[in-house]
Length: 168
Image 1: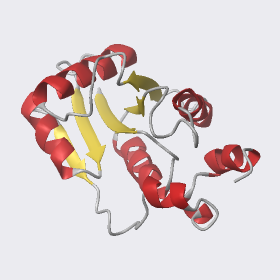
Image 2 (image 1 turned 180 degrees about the horizontal axis):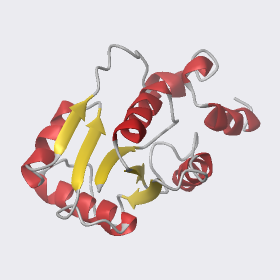
Image 3 (image 1 turned 135 degrees about the horizontal axis):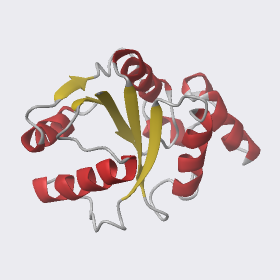
Image 4 (image 1 turned 120 degrees about the horizontal axis):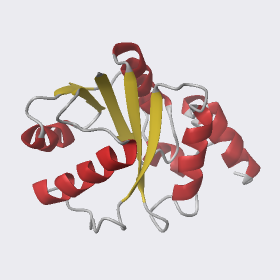
C-alpha cells in the first residue's frame, strides 16, 4: 500500500496545508493526516486542539482513503524538542493511531519543513519525502491568526465558518 502522510497543527487549515493534502491524495492509495497539538497549545483561544481534530474528521469523512489521527504532544511527553527520541515517540503515536505499520508499507511524507524531513529520514531512510515550496503559497498560520479576516481567502471554508461563528 502506498501511504501519504501530512501533519500539522492546522491553526487553521489553510491553502498551504491543503496543497500538501491534495497532492498526497492524488499520489497515494491512503493518506494519514496527523493533527498535532494538545489542549492548552497556542491554538486554545483561536482554534482548540479537539475542535481542529473534529473539523478535519468532518472535512474528510466521505473519503475512505483518508485517516485523520490526533497526535497529542502532551500525552506522549513532548516538550517542543525536535530530536530523534521525540520524533520516534511522535511517529509511534501517529502510526499506532492510524493502525499502520510503517515498515510494511511504502510511505511518502509531505511537509513544508526541510528539518522535519531530515529528522524523519533518519528514522525511516526507506520512506520518501516531499518538501513543499513555501514560496508558491505565501501564507502561514501565524499570519492568519494575527488577522484572519485579512487572510480569509487562504483559510479552508469549514475552518473559516467555525472562526466566523466565534466572532472574529
